[in-house]
Image (cartoon, rainbow, N blue to C red; front, side, top):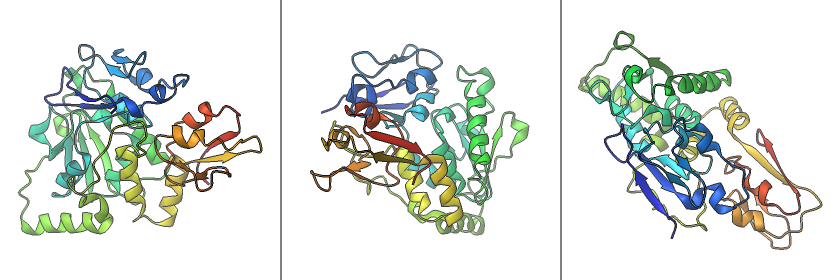
Length: 312
């Protein structure tokens, strides 16, 4: 069984970060060059030597590492599905952190963990305007997440992925937002809830109890939670938006004549994007399951595998 645990940071009031070393590319293949989480961490709290570790004395709970990790080895401890459901109950909801919960309809430990996939899912699940409450970031050790979130929002907007979804804005001062309690009246509640269901019932109504229990060992194949969200959202989007998502998030794996059909890439892939249909033939690539982590390319001893961003 893999080493799976929760880390409670200095700033969070709960278990902020879920760690599953069996998902880590460096732990799956010791020669992997992946350092995405360590490079994203502004406090040097990530260890990648003998196992994936987080130093709680250094970790400030910004969750930037979870947004950077392509395999789900580091993920937010909060149930994001439940968060989306809470936000769907009110028009123009506000999402906050553990320090701004009094002025938010739903909270995460820190908004630094909102990856681009989360932002796309929120935009196409909710109605009206979603405000990210960043009003306490100025006096927080995680103040650097503001610029990171702005970059992600800009990147997603430039890719045209907010065109048909709700607007997402950052509020850095109390005057930038208007907080209303959840009691918006029966008509307002049901209108917001109905609209969110119509836009993406699969995400809003997903129940934690109904989802498959997550095993944590090196043989388990699964997508990171944020990629699962994106996959559900894609089912209800227009072909044009789906094409933009493909260009932004998908990758394609192809094989050349040097492939010896060893099936090693199938075993090493943490997401199950490569599968064996016939042991005498090259693996089958599953469109939409690849996170573009690059581990299969690093592991291939024959150099016969190519990863292309942008999908097929």
